Structures are given as C-alpha cells and as structure tokens.
Length: 279
Image (cartoon, rainbow, N blue to C red; front, side, top):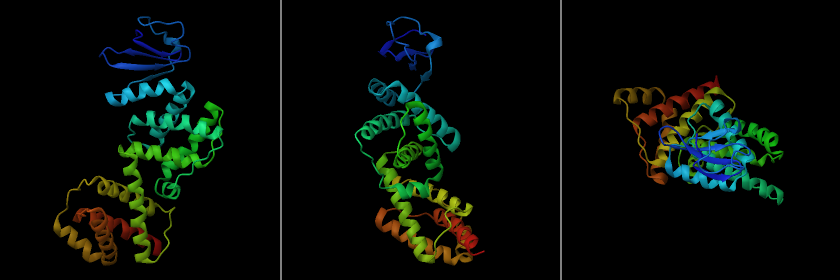
C-alpha cells in the first residue's frame, strides 16, 4: 500500500485495489514518511474503510482533531457493541462517539459532569445498549487511563441507539419520549406497575421500539388480513381498548394512523405481558 496523504504521525491514507481511499492508524506510521512511500505493515493497527463518502470526509476531519488513543478506544467499543448487540450499527458512530469521548475528557478535566435528561428512558428501554456502554467505561479506563463517571454510561448508550436507527439524534429523543408516553397509557389503563425484568416486558418493549420508529419517521407498516384482525380484537377486548387509547393519542399528537397490523401485534404483545403478570 502506498501513502496518499499524511494526516499526522499516527494516521495516513492510502487506496485499495478498487481505488477506494482507506485510513490507516498506527503509532508512528506517518513519522519520517512522505507521500508515495509504502506503508510499513508492522505499524498498522487499524484500517478504516467507510463506504459513505460524506461520512468518510467527516471522519477524516475528526482524525485531525482526536488523539489516536481515543480513536483506538472508540474502535474497541464499536467492536464490542456490534458483537454483543447483534445489530447493524452505522459507521457514523466512529465520528460521533470519538468526538464525544474527546470532549467528555476535556469536560471531566474541567470538573464538568453532563447528566443526560433521558437517563431513565435509556436504562429502561435500552438495557442492552446500557450494559454495553457500562462495559465501555472499562475499555476507556484501560485504554486512556481515565475513569469516567457513571453519568457517561447513558451518554454512550445513546450513541449506540442513534447509530442503530441510523437517524438524527432529534428523532431518537422523540422516539424515547413516545415510548414513555405509550408506557404511561398502558400503566394508567391497567392501573399496574410492570415487571421490567420479565421476558414478556422485554418483548413488548422491543416490538414497541420498532413501532415508535415508524411513528417518528412516518413510515407505514403493511397491513394484515381483516379477518385475523377481527378475531384478535374479539378475543382480547381489554388489550384492544388500551391500544385504542394509544391509537387516538398518536393520531392527535403525531399525526400518524396506526394500521390494523400494528394494532393487532401490539395487542398480542400487550395481552401476553398482562397475562404473564397476573398468572
């Protein structure tokens, strides 16, 4: 591989056999090198190949500002998240998360701790992401020698959530607010406190998250056969009564029309959740 551009002592760029630009990280990989030199293989620690051209340009700008230790720690965290969450995570997280960690360290040195206003929602609705973020603090401590406060767990978890939905942070905020609003309707309708550690609660929340994503992005879901909808509606009247309240709330506040398919599947999950609770 031939060096195309030298960003600093630790980061250079090259191109692959398809003429796609690559960023190569390695301590001292650009030191005493010049454009046209061969990359020393033993110095390569990480190769970044981002498919999105706009994103790639943003990442190049980021690596000019963020120290290599933070970039390497970010890569470790992203690798952990992709492995444990089992979800597609946008490459955009390399930009957002490394930038966040960089400034979080600066804030910490200045004695500033930023508390996420959505911390309760993140912990309850995105437990898997929260758990990975908690492990991420150990990676940061090992890699950077910095012990982050527990408040950073929610901040990092939110970056995972944002990268999963591949949308703006503003939509993620709306998504979690909508989740909380719907769960409040469920709790008031049934006048119960739910077991947030139960499997059925997890299943209901998982299905509800996908539904909320469709609401905030106004993307409809294919409908079901009408006879199936009628069967479930008759068999589970209490669940459908609750879904009716949710449907009216969403239509009024989010200008979104729930399909019969969405009402049916949410009712099934809700019925299972409440039946399990009373069993």
